[in-house]
Length: 191
Image (cartoon, rainbow, N blue to C red; front, side, top):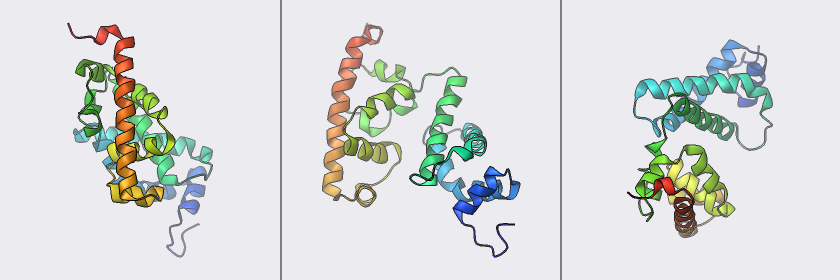
């Protein structure tokens, strides 16, 4: 067994999960539970929904762990799976993902508020993917992950001021893209 000396190395746990070892799956679940449940609670305040999303995400992770390429952190890979579980959960409930509207990055957008209510998570991510790379990273960390500018600075190896600039730049670009989106989707126009 991997854990005779009680050292819980993520790579060893991943190898065990690939072999469908239940103990390794439990260790992986416990190791990342606190971080992943916070990801789920960012999108729903309902405890049952959050746990459902979390468990679906872990199930997907266990089923696809053999696809993890060891590029970037495992936590980032798992976090991405949790985001997809959030999307799947709300699509399954056939809801539009209006839960993203309160995120402060969108509060200063001068477009029709109904357009934001109608945008689903995937469309917002597509808009984020068209931002300059560093601005997109800073905005995602700030608005979606809840990082402070100091933490973003450490993560991206930039100053706090540069982090603030990237977030402001991303907001400006997003604002313009949302205006265009609103124009291209007349059903969102105010009545």
